[in-house]
Amino acid sequence: KLREFQDLGHDVTFVVGTFTAQVGDTSDKTTGRPRRSEEEVRAAAASYADQAFRILDREKTTVVYNADWLAKLTLGELAGNAVQSSVETLLEHDDAGAARVVAGDDEIDEIYLELDTRLLSLLALQAPVAADLRLVSVIMHSSLHLERIGDQAVNVAKMYQVTRDLPPNATILQQIGEMGHIVVEMVRVAMDALKRRDLELCMRLPKMDDPV
Image (cartoon, rainbow, N blue to C red; front, top):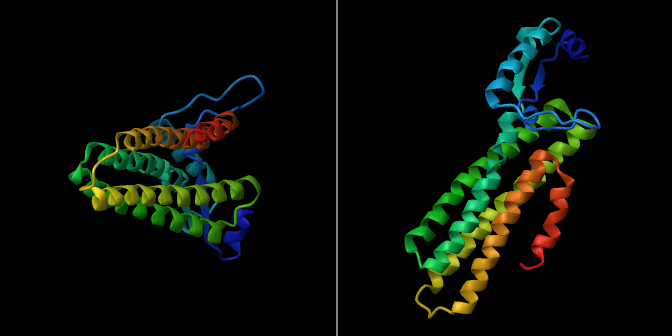
């Protein structure tokens, strides 16, 4: 079909699953596909493209790797770290830490915007359907929520900045510290569940949220 599009004058984008191939996935009912390193996957991907060019017109084909946007899900690590740092700033009365949290949000915003641009381009150019479309939709929504987590971390840091001269309350600080620890762990579990497509991990999150 892709070659037929090219014969009609269209350029095509050939997507290679270099990110999803790194994730252990069920290949049948009893065994799992082992995880592969990025280097192993990239080496295999090169041969996939060569095979595709036996049919596709190389001049009218753009090869992209889904790791180029899915790997941006390190956005989750940045968001989780921002929450942890903002809570530590509050607990430790750390002026410099608060400033770092506020400044660090720019990186989260940049990754989110780049990811959003790439995904919109993918939707416009490739029109994914079924499972592929659902995956793109999940990533778009997830990245937006992660960007908002970064914003909330900034809010915590700024709240510290405006209240830094007020007398602290040990009980409240302890509760905030406990909440922060749980929230950071929830972000990490959620990201791990998404990467593995692990429903059991997903189902842990509501119970983790109860104490918060």
